[in-house]
Amino acid sequence: MMRRKESSFTRQTSLPQLILLGTGGHLFIALLSYLAWIATGNDLWVTSFFNYQGALFFLLCSGIGSGVSLMVWRQFSPGDAMRPAWFLIFLSFALRLSGDVLTHLLSINSSASPIALKELGQVVGGPGAMVLLAGGLLLVLRMYRRLGLLARLTVFDYVLVGAVTAYTLRFAYDLLEWQSDSPAPVTILKAIKWLSDPLLSLLLFEAIFIRRSVIRMGSGLISRCWGAFTAGIFFTSVGDMGLWAVAQGYLNWPQSSITWYVWFLASAAYALGPAYQAEAMSRASKEVARYAPEKRVEFA
Amino acid sequence: VTGKGIPMMYRLRIRKRRLLTPLDAAAEFFNAVEREVEAPELDAGRLRLQAAMRAHTELEWETAARQDSCFAQTALGRVLIAELAVYLGRHAASAIMGKIRYEQPGSEDVLTAIEPSLKGFLGRDAAAAVATKIVHLLEPGADTPLPPLPQSG
Image (cartoon, rainbow over the protein chains, first blue to last red):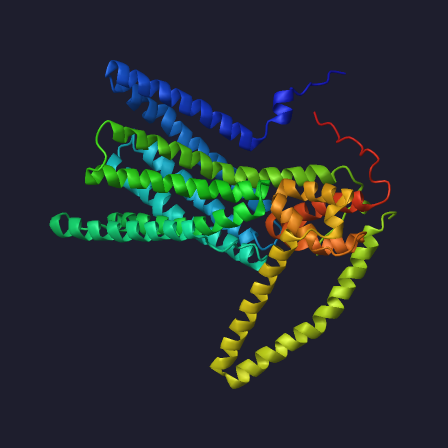
């Protein structure tokens, strides 16, 4: 009888490790294309990279996030406290994936106006996904609080909260000033897109609380899961602040191009969250397979 | 069932139910009175009570994390901490085991301590899977090697 031998790589490599390895490889190629652009002055190196490999990376990360978070949600039983949270997180990933498809795929070759599709994609994958993620993380925070694990903020955290509040207020001020000078009418899509920054600030508030609580728990698969979401939100904020700094003239060309790469880190971090949760659940299921059904504990 | 864990779980559930019934009745009475009187001070009182309960749980976690119980310092306690740390993290696992006040706890003591956190973060099924391993580690002769995982493919 032929027996397929499992290689030690597939046996030992988990999904989070694959995501980390893939991101490392992707960033290495990104670095090579960036260096080629700097050395030759030909921007085709970076535009090709962002249009093809970069777009594929975003789609893959959103796809993995959607698929794995759906799987995680289905593994929670009805009545489990975290089931609604994972449902919202799954919907958030699904919107992010739809947004990525509209922004990166359909808007390239489409008879419809590419700009309209791109804008719709940015709304769906931006504020739309953020609202749902904020709802999911709020339920996670409620769980931490219920278990008495919600940590108190430190002075550093309060400084961070202050910085986030200041940034949101500054953004609102800039927006009002810019709109009063601009003759272009405000469309619904444009108005929804403006919600991105206040929503990101809300996510950052939640991330600060979760990060402190995760540090309090120590490094485990669950802590890594929520830590990855926190990292995703943090990198998104850095990328967003980079865009704002470029628009305000604080960051000049070509140094500003470095901020484009932060979005890859954000996407990878978001995909890692459900991957760590799925890894925890799969490891637990493998453990129980060693015991006969009548010897297994059941929780009501 | 040869293990002592599962029958004890049933007993534990009955004990819990006995304890919860008067508490549920009290809660229902409290809600009825609240509906009847519609007094805002009752709301304030309930909020104060909830805040106090939360503070108590937090304090319990912190105290448990700081002072290792006798069980957490035993070899078996350390094994269980390592087992839980894979999922919840070392500090959380130590805090959970720190809540156990006996040197040789029964399965029900350990399960009572680990159930809320495991069920909260992993869900009922995965939590029960981890608890199964914990119960078997607590049994005498647990140091005998476990059978290997079934090979797939």
